[in-house]
Each structure stands twice: as C-alpha cells, then as structure tokens.
Image (cartoon, rainbow, N blue to C red; front, side, top):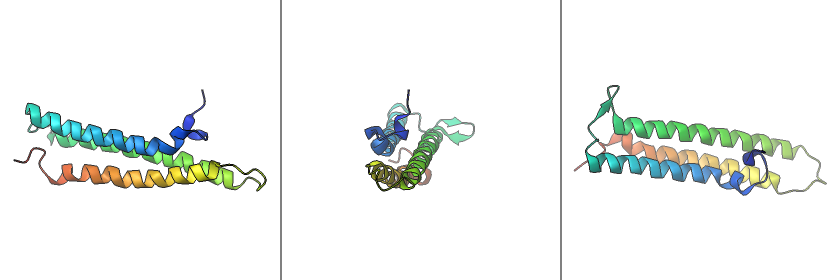
Length: 123
C-alpha cells in the first residue's frame, strides 16, 4: 500500500490540520477528565500527571508534524526539478501542506502552553 502522504492525496494536504485537531481534543479532554474526576493533583514520576499527559501528546504531535513537513518538503523539491512540460498540482499541494505543518506546529505549541503555566483546575 502506498503512503498517502507521499502522493497527491487529499490526506497529504489536510494531515497537519488533523494532527492539530487530535492534539487539541486530547489536551482538553485530559484536563477536563482530570478535573472532573479529581486526578488533577495526582503525580506520576514526580510530575503532575496532567502536565505529563499533555506533554506526551504535544511531543507526539510535534514529531508527526515534523515528519509530515519533511515528506512534503522532499516532494516539493523533487517536483520543482521536473521539466516544465510536466505541469501538475503536486508542487502546490506539497508547498501548502508544508506551510500548514508550520502553522500547525505553532498551534500545537499554543495549545500546550497554558498547561505549563497554569494549574490544570484553577478555581
């Protein structure tokens, strides 16, 4: 099976936004469940479990976004080296996907920032 990120597939163009949305939902889900069920003060390995959970999801999301950006960068550079007679939407899709990865990296960090600065269940 071909990797859809390496082709002109719609998933290639929206994968960064999907990663950000999943990170957003997981981050707020972790905080909501921890506050609702009283796990906000629990500690794991000496760290707050909510911060640890959000930190883990942030690292995974950043790794996936960097991987997606690298694939799209290679695809963009490869398509630019082709002759002008082979006109295709591939460079456009790859460049937009790469730029969306950059925007999604900023959004993931922006979502994770409050968990580092504020207590999870401030009253």
